[in-house]
Length: 141
Image (cartoon, rainbow, N blue to C red; front, top):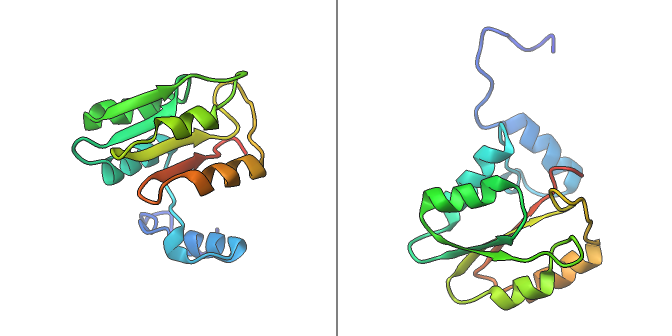
């Protein structure tokens, strides 16, 4: 903290933070995104990944900003009912079509707190077409 000048705005690229996170997880700095809050990041991802008649898939009960971002973007969004108070990955896969571009998965699920295992997530991701981006929201991990 002693090296930070409080009179200056922070680095908007979050370069040093992204470098440290990337080193820790063994990825490149370009693969790390930092945000001043989840609302901003959810909207930015929706606006950046969804075009025209593209669709977004999300749990029926979820963090409200997923739906808000889709409404602002004026895209179609598909809500998948929960199964045993958690995300139903099988039904989510069934809802994917040629217009799907984005899937929101919160883990643990918000608001129920149910948790998907790493194995469940990996198996799910292997079945998702490459043109669909899956955002794994782990804000509460």
